[in-house]
Length: 139
Ligand code: ATP
Ligand code: MG
View 1 (tube, helix red, strand yellow):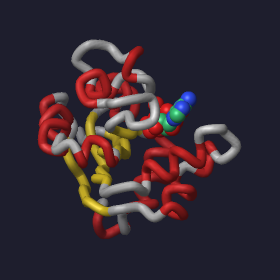
View 2 (cartoon, protein in one colour):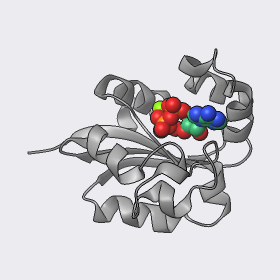
View 3 (tube, helix red, strand yellow):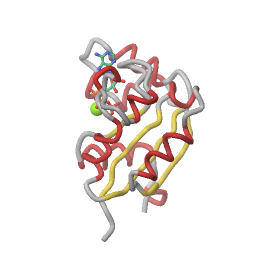
């Protein structure tokens, strides 16, 4: 049976450090199938739209500056229990709190430059995947 889906980004810090390959390998070894993938750079406005739910938070302006500071890799990933299992693989938002062996523990630099994004629910996974990929790219 095909699994369900989550959406991920490899963030600018991890791309700049040359960690795309290592992070993709961790995703695949954990059983995630890459459904869609693209390298692109967000404008400040597009980053602002993607993170709109955080627009009242004190870190919003810095976050959208950071997310538009360099290229990212956007991904739709498929696996049973994709959203929860992927959040487990990436670890806590703050790498200082992330478990050993998680992507953020290995590759994140700070609570802001934290290497990867993972959707927080099935509904947001669907919205975020559609934000980056056309229907024909994700079927
Ligand atoms: P993501 O949504 O990127 O997977 P998350 O779900 O673990 O991360 P959120 O609370 O959704 O965390 O925050 C979104 C992003 O905003 C974080 O990944 C991080 O880059 C940034 N962020 C969150 N909290 C802070 C903070 N206190 N200071 C600076 N940046 C923060
Ligand atoms: Mg989040």
